[in-house]
Image (tube, rainbow, N blue to C red; front, side):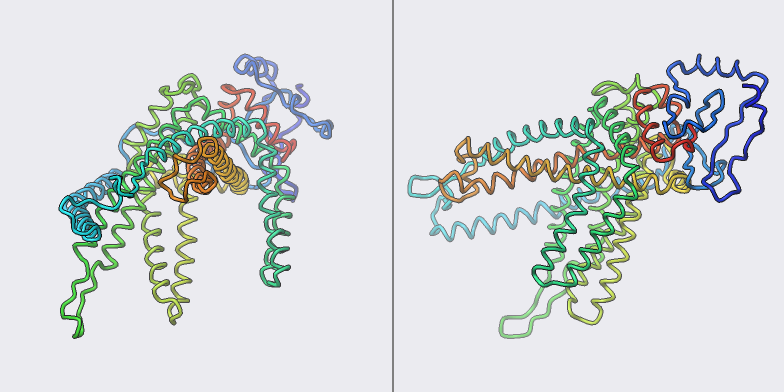
Length: 569
């Protein structure tokens, strides 16, 4: 041991063109003492010999295995000192002005809905009721044709649809639970299937386009097929590591299922806000409706009604609130996974402290940071919607090309910023950074492990998206089965006659939408957990090994399949 330790130390980054090899210096005078101390601190820790591949038996290893503080990507040469590990920040409100601004716009929308929206809806309802009474013959009792009064009129109860939706939702929950279990055990196979599915969809499109004589589409689809095959070949060795990340994220979510309720709660709040927002928009549209003067025999002069500025403000409010509520879930999940990663005893039950504390932080001290990042995306999304409306109104005119280019640029900016926020908010949830500081940590992360993060995130996200579609289809089939067994009477309000088969289409559609939405919420939580696991593994593998040795072994073994002896372990 002394001979190996005194044999000199290689530099951290090799000057040769070969991939950089990380060497760890071991003091010569107390080598045995360090080895004993490492075993006492980490009794379950495996040495490099335990992870040695059969094909690399000739590689010399030091007598003690020291785990690096953060994970380095040996295929990217960079100064390790430039990568700063995250630190827990003091519990203070960060980016507070943006939180105040968000609450101000929320109050404004509610006030507009009450002052202008409700009277506008009442006026429209009164006009509609008068119109129906006139069509019914002007009866004094105001009866309509939709009452079941024994004169041939039909009254449909929507209770059946509610019962069908509840039963379908229950089946969706069962399917989601099965999907999580399958993903945990067969993640690697499902990742391969999701990648090959997109590849062969391109091949199918090429064949169909060629048969129909669309040469250009066939050529483009064939090129997409070839690119997909090259991509699959290039990332094949990384699939086990992505599957290990998926298994880690799923384990964290299953240990803290209360975070799923947080996601469903935010979805419910989003639906409620959309109803209030729509009411407010209708009130403003009624208040600023085009006013015309003149009669039918003369030229009328009308004002423009609601202008683009008011529409832009409403769109920013809608997109901002949707982004804020979605990112509250994302930050909460990051906090839950972080607690499970560093202190698993605090995050091991349905509604443990590891679930409630991150939610409280996301809605208090970190809420301003969430509002800050969400506002940037909301402004770009609103601008894109305005440009899209203008392009549709000017279709075929000279400026349509410029509007199309502007919409494309805004779409790229929107997607890039959303992807950036995904990782920035992980640092917000893990450490409590403000938005700009979290952004700097994201840039440091991508400088260190950029392609590794992107490729793993792409593989996992594609797998979860395909899972949502499959679960939606299965839920639709279950809905058809429920409608068939029940006889179809629950869906009479949808029309289509008395035959049970006529309701199968409506049953499939309702169940498919429910299944897709519920699975999308669940898989969104899983996606956030997996992304947090990637960041945590890059920053604190030693904590992972100490608290979750089995998952750590799976992760490191998969990582070594990509980088072999150069992975730093």
